[in-house]
Amino acid sequence: MSRTDKLLEEILKWQKFRGMQEAKQVLEDVLSSEDEEKEREQRIAYELTDGEHSTSDIAARISVSHVTVSNWQNKWSELGLVSKETSQASYQHLISLENLGLDVPEIPEAEEEEDE
Image (cartoon, rainbow, N blue to C red; front, side, top):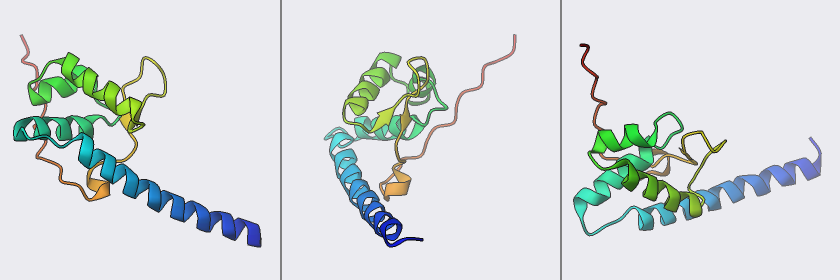
């Protein structure tokens, strides 16, 4: 590996570290609320914003409207905390709360639909 490659790797390592620290601070600010229940809902919604769950799925898990979850995700998108690969895709967080060392409330299980 060349000296330039080693230097670039070192720079990248420190940029990632700095970015994670900044992301942690932004998430702590954005997801905090004086209302404990709202904070719990937002943290769960953020954690479930993993590209696998739709807005409606997330809303059902935390008993809020899909519009509420959509508004949160749009806000997080503007801050660069979540993104979509395509306009039809589900949002995906850049990093989970757990990976940043932030508290993740217990995530409710999805309700299974009854067979008729």
